[in-house]
Image (cartoon, rainbow, N blue to C red; front, top):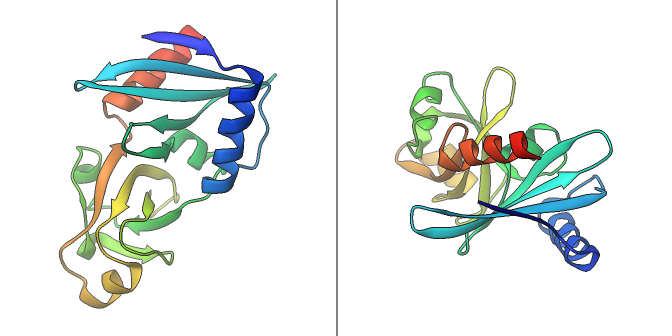
Length: 168
């Protein structure tokens, strides 16, 4: 695992991208990037550092740039979402894709949009994925795979983020 601070220019560019793509609402003093190899892929994890906290912001998976679940749960970024019932939670936390029957609420989105997966009771994000159906199709069909899970709480990326936070 390799850690480094981004230059001011790199930080500014990343923050602008996060503001544009995910409506980032907070500024940070520094951005730390961790470059690591997971499952034969090089990924980058970006951590925002302010005077009071360190928050994982985004993950660059080469083919996909996604917001970190931590930042979503702190309301620092906005993303389309689906809310799932309690019965679907254990499966998703084991890496399963989100099935339409387990979805109880959605925002409006199209096929291939990034979608946050929220648990029903406290509305916390537990995963991020790619929509396989539009929100309208989910509401009408109520069957089939609705969201392809990319990252979920407890996965190898999550554990890597926890390790990084312990080191900085």
